[in-house]
Amino acid sequence: MARARAWDSIENEVVGDYDVFSIRRHVMRSPRTGELHAFHVVDVPTCVQVIPFTSDGRIVLVEQFRQGVQRVSLEFPAGVVEDGEDPVAAAVRELEEETGARTRIVEELEPVRYVDDRGRDKLVRWYRMDVLDPGT
Image (cartoon, rainbow, N blue to C red; front, side, top):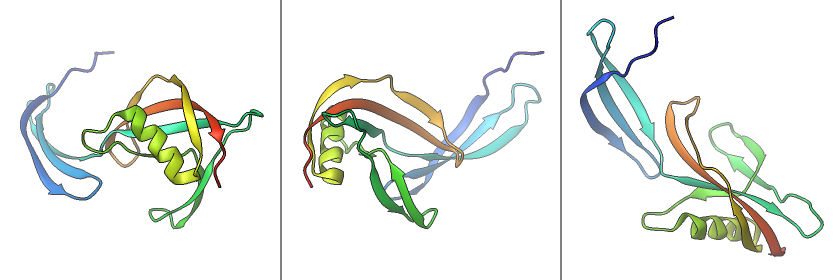
């Protein structure tokens, strides 16, 4: 089986810029046929996700209504790293905003970069935290 080869980038432009994502039109040349193909890529900012543990070993999750699926979802506290914000500070901020809890970071886990099922290129930084004060 032949190995996959990189495609040449011919054109790359932002065609839509929104509050929490942007859309790029990327024209690429196929290494196999030489033909040009247009792709649309959704770019999202770096995100943080927190795995918070209470002193008795329970994991804190949050319920949030998600517009995209029109239902409540049970999930880890998470959010976007603001421009110029340190990802660790963003993780602490997101946990406090979503749960009211104060924490300390125990471990920064390996970041994960992937393209999700909607074509979004995502970088997620994961943190394990101990909850110091459960908040509300």
